[in-house]
Length: 181
Length: 422
Image (cartoon, rainbow over all chains, first blue to last red; front, side, top):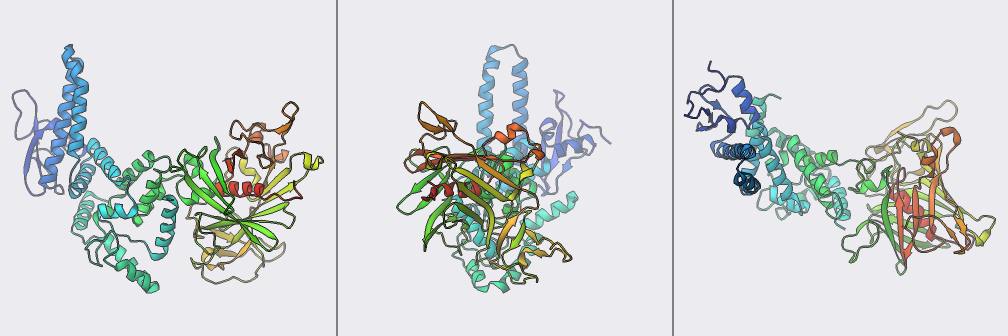
């Protein structure tokens, strides 16, 4: 069994290892191990030595997996850059740090500005793969989509059916009447 | 649940044949028999939120989000929308669908725990211990209506003021009473917005406060003391009842009209013990109209008959009676004002919350039996404070163990002054 840190696809010249992740529809993605490890689920699989030959994810499609890995790669690079800037004595590097944070924030904002179906899939994938940053980002996006909406508007946005009994419905309507008074 | 089964269920949900939607369908079939007319209304495609979807539309995946994710999302909404009017967002979440309602109710804490008024039921929950909930009352003489708002004082344009309760003075024969409602335009007893009422005695020296729901952990002594179990169904359209939860009395002191009145409130439904450290006042958590979570017992006749246990659904809809605790009730008395020689008036320290002298102004503190060992600091806490700040504007600050409803009702008694009292 290959030891953790090595993958069949090998390491590049700098000694950085890559991992192969395989989507449910059999598409393979090669990413830095550091990026893949932003998913706790994947990290545990790597640590358990299951990365050999690629890690299959039977419930994440290629489209969503691509997005998740894009998020991870971007964030891992940002972490690396900021730690470099932190240890560097170069003033220019240090000054660039807050800018890079802003870049990351605007990346996140643009990243999560997706169609609802994609948002749902991202949310589920982030949950299953345990990518905390992405999960927080997606949950916050859903919370932001809820704000400012009446119950009817929320149902329309998320295509949710009103499944209250008529009796409950009446009580709830009064509750809302009071709240929106 | 294993990963595999979670994955399978997720896949099924996506394909729209999830077991959860099957379960939901089952429930709907049941209700179809009971309320066919209303059900048909729900099925109409014109119903907002349905769009062009057919009547057999299963619940979409957003309604079936894993509970921990829904919890995360709704917790974020709860955390960010702490004050009114934004807080209505939390109430909106609880109105979306069943699963969202369950999670929202789990996320929102009681008024005492979080200091925030959220659902109408918050109006019947005791306030926080540490600091009072600050409200104001606006009187509209023309319509004899009194409106209770959350907030320090009326805001500049009045748009952001959260209306909590409304009361109307109703005159019948020689007596006036106050009807308390959730909305300012409907004071009918049979309306589902009816919350309670206030009735004075003939002299206007004693007032009885009635709650439409009996508080939890109280014993109901029905007016007619039935021996048999009543088996009528509770219909949601009839009034729930009128439960005597408190009595407020006014007395003149030896100074008669030259001195302030003596006020006493006996809170039948609140045990005196609850103001002890760690004590807990009855806190309802259902909806403001339901009897769902209440279980009543009739007290044993000092003799051989056992206590009869009733479940909520077997009580008659118009049961009335005294709702009291088994313990000694909490008694509140007004703090005696001091005569200020220079100002030539009676004074209380309202800490800036009351600025206009009025016979209606008062502060209530607990009057406890020494045997209960309540520390002095606790006994001095002003539990309810009410007073004038302007023409037809009054502030009302209340705290544990009173609820907004009880506090408002007590303050309303102050408006109903009679010659015998003045």
